[in-house]
Length: 269
Image (cartoon, rainbow, N blue to C red; front, side):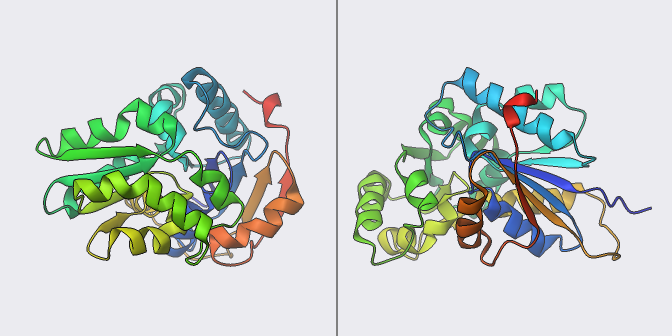
């Protein structure tokens, strides 16, 4: 019998909605419960201990529903806290690091791979270790981009926006100079910057979207749900519902379909 329980997805803010978008495309029969910790975004500048504490609360909240899997659609949590979360949960947990690392290792022709991510993700070295295990000859050039997350959250993602173009060029200059042929967008916010990034790096550089790769991994992991009643989407945030409703469409590529509610996530865990 098909498992009709929903999939839980969480992120520190709205970036994880890019993973929801990919899930809705690849797994259109699946229902989703999304939590964005918008009151505490970004996680990328926090200590590993704080990130783990927040992530435990996020997972505990999602598990208060009858879910069948959790997508950790946050690069920072995936790189710093996923092993601890997996040890504490019997549910399947899908992060963004391993799927993205596998895609990059397959796509690169030269083994020269770039990574942009939060400070915590770069500091953890998780992407570098994952790629090294898959392709020992690869060289990874990593760059922390702390200012990109708040820029994306505020909708500054389009070509012609001189501020975001300046930031992208400053952050990515070392990767371009290193001659990378593949670039991991190591934060689920960053796929919204694909056009700006591609314009700076050049069309020959392959861009790896961690949300898309996580959704593909989830597709392989789960038994296909049979067609039945229409899937449902429920969204929860820890801060302004109104702000989420205004911004969600940017990440989803369409208006958010489903209810949006505020929750005190600190009461979980």
